[in-house]
Length: 522
Image (cartoon, rainbow, N blue to C red; front, side, top):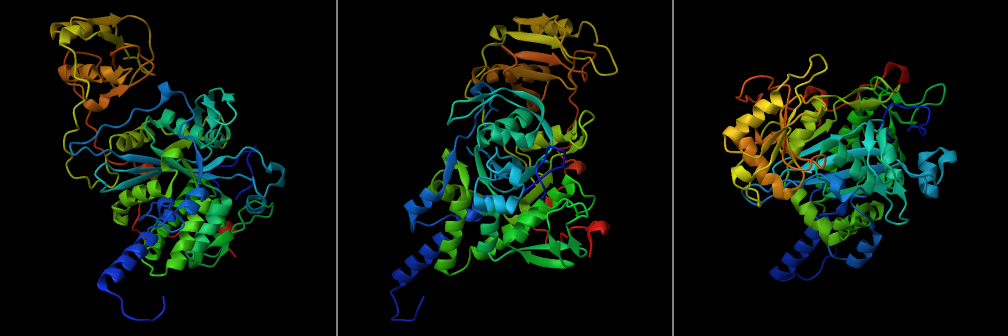
């Protein structure tokens, strides 16, 4: 499965009749069938219900497991707060590996020269399940996005991979395993990730076969094969086709032939496939055939690599019950807003402003479909604030922008303002720092969260501007470019609307149809 504009260093594209039974027996049989109808496969592609207990240990043995996060503990994103009902959101990173580590994967993936080399995370999608379980958001990242990859340690060999800057994101998987891809996402988004699920070429093929195919649509005949050999080989007639096996893999890998032949078009095709598979899984999950449902469970568990927190069928079952609560109409698929990199041809970077906003919406558990009910106030911090006169606050001047010099004296002015409000331990920091677009209050550890929130309340700074950061030693207020004058802070209003550049698709949309590039029709 591939995502991304290609560079020169990339791999190539793409029950029988009998006596009547007592009602209790019939009830138990129905319950057993329902357990089977909740397959682990459903969990992988946004899930419905859970797996049963036939062949329980056998299914557990099918699952491959890995460490969740291979980065340093100090660099992990903070866990989200519980809402008033004690619920917290779940974030799961879905990874598609292009590993050529078996004869089957080699045959499906091609590129003989890359057999048994380090795998790449060619599909990366963050699945966010809201705390109240009413909605789900999915954010995919183009595979050739340039990101900073943190230091990662291989749990098997102990090898330490040093931190990298401006590196293609799919390289993260080869630096110790999927836990490094998780660490990379947390560094970029500051979203705490609870679990990962990874699947390879062979897994995609086997799962599509197990459910009898996934319906996809093109608006013209397509053959993804150019005269110079580029393309996945996908060949379909205009309209809807149920793809399975190798054809399903080709759909997910196709870039040449969809729209403008870019990775963004490929991501749209993947979203269409994912949404259609969700609907197919829900249909299959109501089947009354234990044999077919058992086959689904076998296929899914054999195809998956998961973190230890999801390392048993029982744990996957519990997770899938949570995912089952979300109707498809409340699932929103998005692509991380991006722009082309000025430093590297064909690569992309997160789009300033829009990408940050999308990450914030997910981080703050705001539904991307705009249909949130008014949320209850978040649970209060377990670490209450110290008295104001005992809260040490370092104030920095971050008012410099790309077009304007820093407004002199701002750190001193706001430190005096805090002192006048009773924060007598507030001090101005005269050292030069990078500019901040918006005023922010940072704190390094959970025991100082209450103090940071107290400072924000005193100044009228919104809760969303208070963030945990290992880059500071104590509560640190950075006066941003949005507060260049005066002593009253006025927060800019966030409309909490998803950026148009995220290209949102609703999970219940059955009319999605990919536009075929005229150069790839037949």
